[in-house]
Image 1 (cartoon, rainbow, N blue to C red):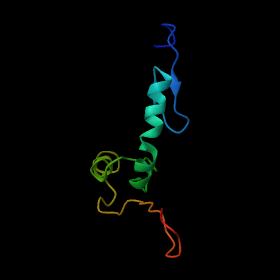
Image 2 (cartoon, rainbow, N blue to C red):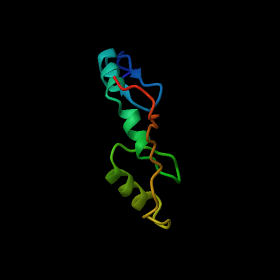
Image 3 (cartoon, rainbow, N blue to C red):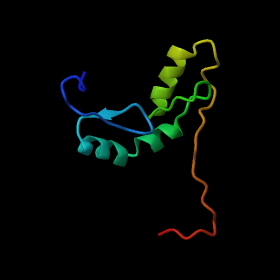
Image 4 (cartoon, rainbow, N blue to C red):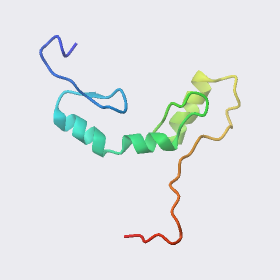
Length: 86
């Protein structure tokens, strides 16, 4: 384990990511991985996935008895037609 070797772990507060350096954690945070996972969320267990294909594979592996064609919970930001876009 890294802690046993005297190496500090930098952990993400939103997921189970652990980096060896602060730079690793910064890169992880800026990658918007949490936003991408929120777009492909399993409706049965709320686990998030970066791609719809990974979500479908998860459904087949973890929830085989459920309807595999069920729609994923997709979170799309709503933009008002009156809002200014910069």
